[in-house]
Amino acid sequence: MSRSLAELLDLYNAHAPLEEASTIPASWYLDARVEQAEREYVFGCNWIAVGRLDQVAEKGQFFTVEIAGEPLVIVRGTDGVLRAFYNVCRHHAAAVANVPCGTVQHLRCPYHGWTYGLDGALKGTPEFAGVCNFDRAANGLVPVRAATWEQFVFVTLDADAPELNAWLGDLPERVAPLGIGNLHFFARKTYMLSCNWKVYVDNYLDGGYHVPHLHKGLNSVLDYKEYTIENSAQYSLQSSPMVSSQEHESYAATRTGDRAYYYWLYPNFMINIYQGVMDTNLVLPLATERCLVQFDFYFAQVSDTAREGNAKSVAVSDRIQDEDVDICESVQRGLHSRAYGAGRLSVRREGGEHLFHRLLAGDLRKAT
Image (cartoon, rainbow, N blue to C red; front, side):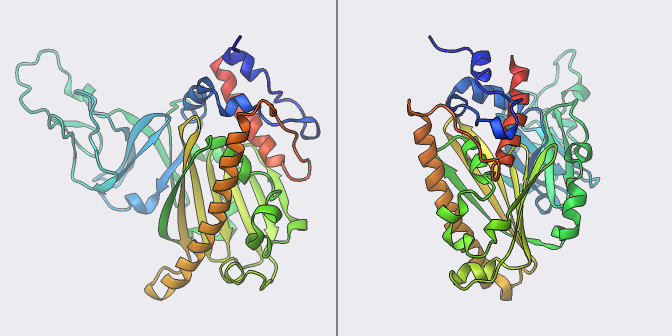
C-alpha cells in the first residue's frame, strides 16, 4: 500500500541533532506529492531570488520568470519603482510579456491587445464597449511582492511573509565587507540536470566533503582541513582559506585571494565569492527529477581587456559544474534503488545539509 503524504513526511525526524540525524528519505526526491507541496509551501511562501538589478536598471526594462509554477514579470516603472506582477492577462489569461526580457512603454497582451501600464493598471481594452458592470480599476495586473538586496532581485508570493531584510537576518552585514556590489555581471550560463533540485542543493551543502574526491582542481587551491561551516536561521556559510598551488594552473590563476566564501540562502540560491570574482547559482525545479541551474558570473573588471581572463574563469566553473552534474545524476538514479532509504550525515562536514533538510521539513509540514 502506498503511503500518504503525511506518512512520507513522518519518515524524517527534523528534531534529531546532527550527530543522530539522517538525510531526508529517498521518497522526498521522487514523489510528485512532495514536489507539489514544495511548489506551494517552499517556493510559494519564501523569498526567492529571481534576477539581477542590472536587468531592470532602466525605466521600462523587464524580465520574466516562473516561480512555484506561476509566471511572473518584473519591471521597472516609468516612475522608477521596481514592481512584480503575475504575467497573466486579466481577460483570457495569456502572458502579457511573452519574451524573456526587453524594454517597453507598456505591457500589451498579444492575444486581444489588452494593455497595462508599468504600474499594472489596466489602460486599454479594445472593442469592449457595452460591457456592463466592468470595473477597470479592479482588473489591473495582480501584483507580487518584490524587493532587492545587493545586486539581486527577490520576490515572494506570500502576502504574509516578513520583509526581505528581516528574512535575510544578518546575511547582509556578513556579506557587506566582501564588496560584492563592486563586481559587474559578465555572463549567464544554464544547465539542465536529470535530478531533483534537492540533490543539487545537497551536493552544494556537503561541507566540501566531495571536493577532494570529485573536484581535484578546486581542491588544489582550497585548504580542505580548515574548511568551515556556519549555519544561521535561513542560510549556511561554507568557507575555506585559499592556498598557493600550481598543481592545476587554470584553478590557481582564476581562484585567488585569502579565502573562498560559499553562501547558500534557503531554499535555492548560492553565492560563491573569491577575490574579484563571484558567481551565483539559482536552482529551479522543473519536474520531480529535472531541474535547471542558472549561473551568473561577475568580475571586478568586465572591459574588453579583461574578457579573456574572465572567460578562462568561466571555463573553470564549467569543469566543476560538469563534475557536479555527473554525480548529481548518479545520485538521482541511486535514489530509485530498493537498497537505499536514507543516509547518515557527517558531523564534521554536513551541517549545512542538515539545516536545509530541517527547514524543508518545516515548510512541508504546512501541507498536512
